Length: 126
Image (cartoon, rainbow, N blue to C red; front, top):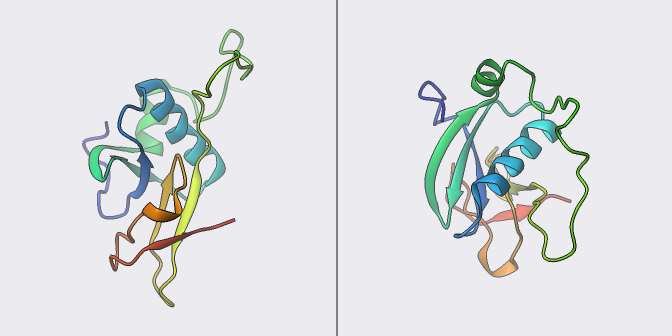
């Protein structure tokens, strides 16, 4: 967690209750890798903000840019069974002129994230 991260500028990354720390960390890394304009992220578990961090903080702490992998870091292979690796889904506010955005580990049409700026339901960006 980054104590200096800007909470007001952070994009929300939603995960369901019970998501492992490793899966949540992988999802945050995926958001930072795929969306270079994102600087700070807030991890939201079942609608509760539980952590706040930033790209610059993670780069400082781990002394390597986000996404750089070295020998022994794994090749992304998977084992049989249920997936433990999430891919970040991007949501954008449907309200014209609103710049609200959020990210999630899963999609359920019944429970789309609410816009952090105006509170309206967001739409999955494909």
